[in-house]
Image (cartoon, rainbow, N blue to C red; front, side, top):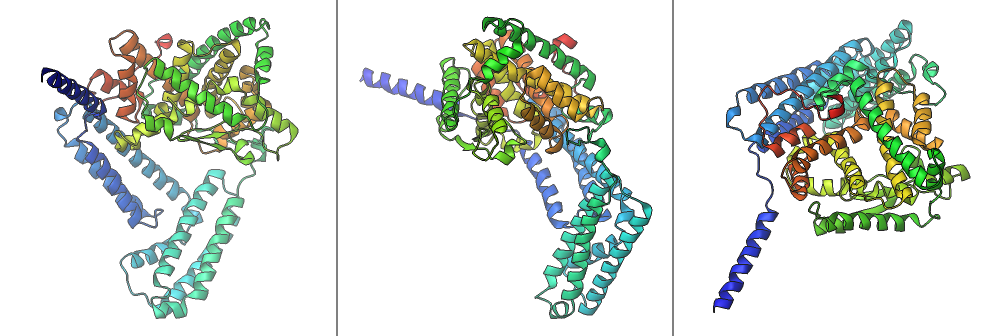
Length: 571
């Protein structure tokens, strides 16, 4: 009997321990507030098919201001640390949304001369929204008036001279939205209202075709940009220092662009010193480029790369689990998969991408010899060993797996400094834990680390107006050792693939933030590694300074301003 009681007690303790370990982080009372704000925005966006109009701007501005007032009236002192973080981040998002709305209104007002006819469509949409029974003959007459007004507007634009690129882009956006709205009006009545169906088709077709042609014309009627091509064929759009400062404040990075470039140069120098040591170990002395060429030539034959990627993924998982560094659910290990990247996509992404699916860059039969060799050399096993875990586990795949299950509402606070920073942090962490075993593997990890530092330098200098795309290509060929075509694809990806200006800098900066937090709480504190890593994943996507507030239990003040100087060498 005593034996059975002992077994029962042990089973109860075991079961209770499992249950407690499975419990999610405490649920924030603010999650409903976050969800309600997003739902309100989506509701208005659905109601206003025409998002480029004074009425839309007025209504959305009213919504944002109402929400800011609602937050201001909340009893902030009653919130715990996690809830206070949600409050700070939601308010930040609303302020950002309001600012972007105001900027959109300003740019709309600036291009009004290109859309003098917009009020005709705006008035029609107002009637359609409330189901007014419009007279078919009057509707056809309005459509004819619209088509003529568009043609007249085109002649006026011709007389005023070519548009600046930003004017052209904004005008095209508005005209396309107006065309979508006109279609929404017409299809609402056509086929249902006999009067409109009888009078409308020819007039609508003329107005729709005229709008479509006008959008094409606006795209082409721009100032010649060929003089901005520095020979690379890449024409980016530098945002300038003030915009960078605005974006850094939003991301809670209290450094200037110049300070971040200095930081990156320090990180690059560390990498270079380590690269020289690895080069010496391989017998190449100070010629680290030769050691890098040696490592590039460790590529595997065509058709063998998927096997390499799988083996590297399992090696990383085993390394993490043997040291009990974080929780890796069995389902997470089971549910990632592989795809091969198309040749077209490799022109923008010469290396693999990841998440639940890791997309592998390797040559296809359609590539020429030079492209095939660059792809194989740039994705050799020693380079891939440094980043497979970045894409899968403990990187992006595990991130996505956990954020789907813990605090998913915080996805609206998402930032590349958390997304890319977490994955990059593991590159830093595994280096410190002697994950690379050979000089070639060390070179592979250092190659990517140098690349992350170089990204900060060339992307920020480009947006400061201090470096052209061609100079950026040459810079990473020389400083990182990229194959030229891979360097060209990397720069094109940075400036022409719709990445935000700070995205490329976010990898290393976010990784350094998490490493600084690790040193503070684990190395110099008493938090276990596993607890540290699990709590970051379970608390969800947000600026790292807010992660720090949650992990340290330091409730941010209601008037919080970013102030965490995480890089000691610049303090």
